[in-house]
Length: 297
Image (tube, rainbow, N blue to C red; front, side):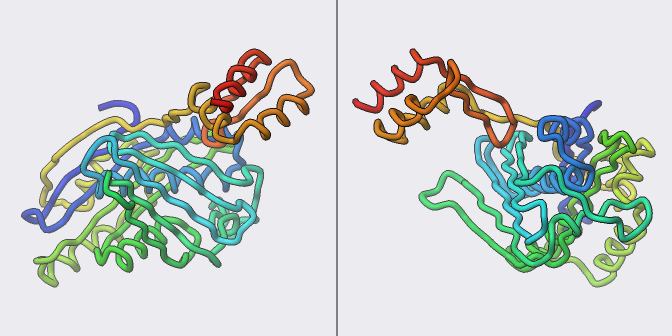
């Protein structure tokens, strides 16, 4: 499969679950929509890809939703991403124009913009009466390690997570991808050591993507004895915002607030900007009058 996509697989007689994805075009679209600086691009891209991998691992239905929020105390502020079971993701950061000096030459200082004094929170809307929520303290701000810590601590599933975004000198996304490997009960100590050894020997995920490896080939590096491919599907940026959704949201503000907006509007329209995709939705005076009438019942 060409373009951005995700694969699901098992290995070692079903005692290991594995997921890998390529998401270069997706992360570049997010960069362009939010005009993120390089370290913020990497932080948002890693979170978005982690959202897709965790959604693949934990959502059973396509319309179920997984939401990830990271607040690390760094200058980027809040990172928020949502992913569906059908490979769709959207995301935003509070401050896209942030920078942190590199600790290692040629490596973006993602932890420097994210911070490490905060939390990672995951919410799964599985269609039940109440969504599932889990929260852990951030460990590094590098995001991949923090996802692994969450899975081990909150879901008691030992996991390896690799996430990477390579940004060119022109600030464009040249490569983005990652993997998630989950160790299930029944593995022998020798099998655990073998998987850990192969994961530790892997180059950085962006190096693998830039070298032309597919998600299947990445898993082949982790499981040289072979794996069983279960599923392959495309992943993409998608935001369900629309004028109709925002009109309904404005109605919910109540008639007094809507009147205030109408009275204070200096343009020939009222504009609402989606924080997730930066699309602008404009409402004419006639539109606002209809919305006011709806709010009045």
